[in-house]
Length: 184
Image (cartoon, rainbow, N blue to C red; front, side, top):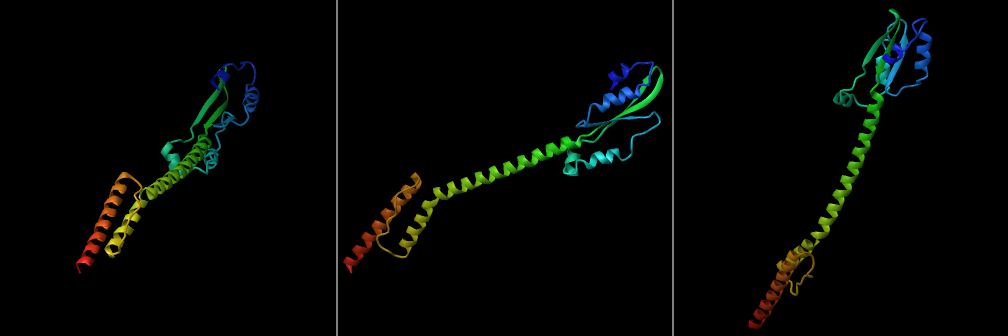
């Protein structure tokens, strides 16, 4: 803006050239530019209009980021004569909308990955602790006084050694029961 003002011709009204130049910019994504008459001020609802364009972004997120529109007024003075004011208002809300949208996607993907990971951990734990059910069943059979209780020796090393010890205990109990019957 300052470079444009510095290059304006001094012998003619610069407003038409300024309007053409800033009209050719089209819609700027993160800023609003307006050329106002020297005694004209920016519309009071301009900042409110910009804020409402970012309605999808929660207010707490806007405050967390600390983004707020800034208004810069630059007087157009050529040859010592004030012709107009150029008002530039920054608009951070459309960028905040993109960031908020990206954060929502990232949170959703993170949640999905976490849930999948937890389910895989639970399946792994369930399969690796399955021999406990067999041990529990074998001990309940021994407690009920049943004969011939034997467990399949499988799973981790610890489970295999416990199953072997439980099988040995079952065999010993069966032998003691048989000896008791013979003594009776």
